[in-house]
Image (cartoon, rainbow, N blue to C red; front, side, top):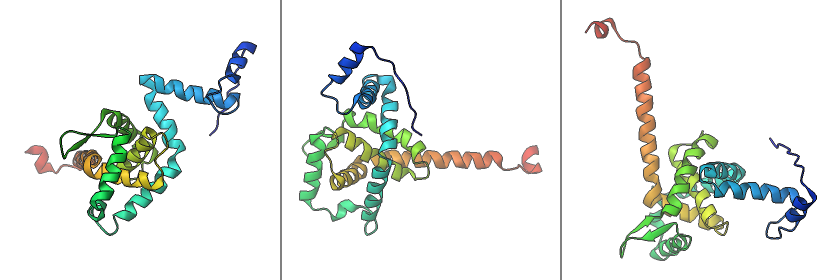
Length: 203
């Protein structure tokens, strides 16, 4: 639901707002952009910044997710069908936006620049896309963060492929851990709610 906020500005404040040429849009759009930029500059408000953009990009994220799972229809790992050139091309794109970095001649790892917003996004994705399983939520988080780090320069196909590579090599481990945690919680709840027999009570 859209909320309307009426702000009273002095003549000088309004003149300054209009002169912000590096921010697109009319004064109201500029105020909106300034709010988002402010959220991003304050560490404790980073989560709010990402929640706003996750909700806004919900349709695009889900569309790419559907495209990703189609790649798994014919193989348990789409990477098995990729040739070396494709792997290198996608890997180079990920390095270009500092999502991954080399840790040896043949090994790579995710950077803190990717990991921190990814973990935040993964946490909030479970609330926004609560009907999805843990692995789908990991895909959504990866798509979103890669779009964020690339500043929107990664197009649909590259977002899909880079998400597959990133998740297969690194991020699905978090989905595995979350799935196990959920299964443990459910098992504990079932045991806690099941009635005990008289023999168990007197044992």
